[in-house]
Image (cartoon, rainbow, N blue to C red; front, side):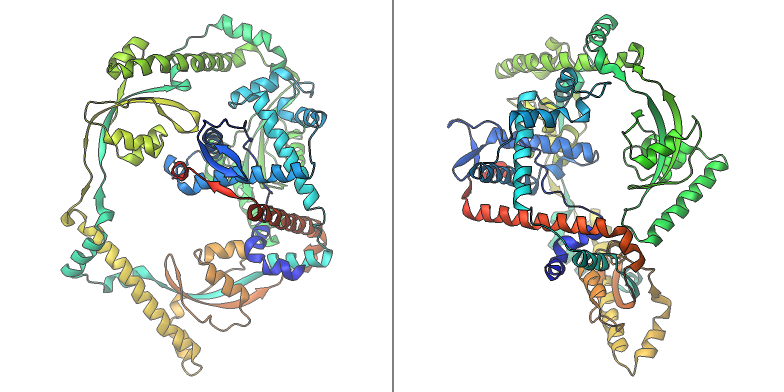
Length: 636
């Protein structure tokens, strides 16, 4: 098996070395109900349909999840055929696996389903027991309901059982685990000479003909995109909620009716500064992070602002921008070392460096509060906001119905808005990407806006991605796409030529130097000629080597595979230019750490092997069951 693991190192071994445990599948999408024959179908899996509605819901759920994880992600990144194909692939996998489970007689009973859902902490009250009210509220806030959620959970549990049955033999012996450990924890030091492209740019003197030819060959890159101005009216819950007034009296009634959900156990609040370190990181990496956290600690002792240092140094994406502030948490909510350190502090005190599975922390306790009920005044605005959004959600359907009738009758947008007590807005000139990003519209909807005549409006409300709402829009005017003349982009064309030609010169120089280094008679003289550019890296694991090699995976593979310290047989292009490299030192995985870490490596190796087995099952299912995509247009 060890040989098999080594052969597959490129597919999953490196990920283990980076501390990434591959999760089998995140089946976030329910199967939905079977479609009737009239509903559009995206694909058939063994004759069973995946409806357009089912696909669209899965796509919107995926967008919502991606935006929660990556708030800065743009609409165009989520509106690609590749992303849509991945969503459809997930739905196909789910159909295949549930079909296989049904044939094997794998089911989940109602008792099992209830037990699992009841165990989810998010649905527990202050007494740490399942609360039906909290359950329904939590689902509603995530645009779900018990029927849909329970169907999804049941499917997930069935697939997990199937996984368990098919991977029960995925075991890793200690020698195999150690082989994986030795491969993953190995470090190298690399000698390299960089021929920076920028150093050759001064030698490049583009002629007028070169510039003209390059412009003609690439002038599509220098297009001024078409732009339009819009008059628009967003119909979203957040927009409408701002117009809904909720009285303190109504908020208090809701508070009293849901009193259980406002109870809390004893809690504390803290801020922290986190420097991330993988649990399996080499000792040198962990010590480097510790030295940095101690330096931050020293700055705090001299009176530096905790908030400012957290914003500057903390690697926790959820709290760094807020000065390291964490929400109130109760006992058991945090990993044990963090919790113990926080509980030992008094409000205002800062801990010594604390190591957890995430890395090194400095913790500042902000306050404690005993078990009790959150006072109404503290949650009043939150309740009012939620009630306003609930009313706005109901109101949005009425507004859409009214506006669609008026649009069909040719009523202008400004008059529609006036009748609804809302205000239209006007945009600056925007291109297609800017419109997609600002409103979260699909490309097809944006195309519709650009084809409108000046002064005319879209015939239907335009759906925003992620279930955010709808947009009513009229095109005011626009300017067509145009290629910028050469005199407007000459500097960019010249810079492009210089960059291209400089890289060619850097490659030519690297090839000449490499020939000299490989010739025993000229090696010493050649090495002396590049002495100023000659550098040696610190010890690199495979993760650090990715950055050091500029993401050139061939260089990464060749340096770790090198059998000796001779210069590698080819130059390598990296972002900065062209590099020559050789192995300076191979540093084996520390033998002393194996005993401490072997359980982790054996476990991770077994999980990866389980993944291989489960993937084999899925591959077999895909080969034996016909999958037919009938609406490719919905994936473009």
